[in-house]
Length: 340
Image (cartoon, rainbow, N blue to C red):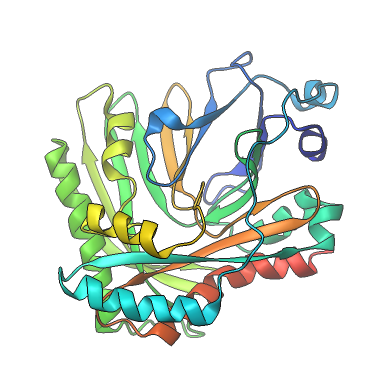
């Protein structure tokens, strides 16, 4: 992967949740198998995604060189925290009118000697603390280089049976030492907005036998309320159709969706790019997509842009939301600054 990054190859290393092994994928065409990875920007359709194919073995990649320079622009100016908190106060008043939600993200930017020296080592240091997440380091000419460790599965589909699963992951609190979570009204309501909307969209898409259960899921320094949702579909094209229907869920955009997306465009001064979108892994039996969270856009000069966000409701506390975004970014920032 180090050669792929330095040579500009279209490549990724990744691990599926609860898997201890990293998988490799590299190539512009599916020469070895039909397995492929598709990275989709926030609030964009599946058809706009950027693909990496199973085209080169690691040994073959060592002898290959990339043919295109990256066209992605990395943000270099962090979001001002005082402005972020002021925007939260403004958003609270706006979302109160619809009893809705909007997700406001911010970016933390800088330059790291560790990243400039060995991006792969930084990524692996980050991943070792999140074995239950979908972990990936990817590079394409279109997206640049991204480090991602996400606890949120957007969609999993067994292609032979039509069985699907997804999740609503919204409520957030610092992971308690004793593991016992006491959720406040804001987080409970935020979780309900997300899970109710996902189930509504699945019903609208004629998904059958929908069932769900709710639990707590720890991811590094934070714990979330998680509602696992299951169902079945008879449509052979359901995977891509459902991705376009579900993404972005209220966990990443807000609700009502069109209002929330308009507010994001109004308040956020940075492009989200892959943040809040998803990464899909597909083969002949299974297709699964994970929301791009707890992530950073990086380059070979050691520059980084960490994306983090929080769901804003009418009863949000600006300081608590700011602190939540810092906590979500803390593990990745620690690896970027201290891993070497």
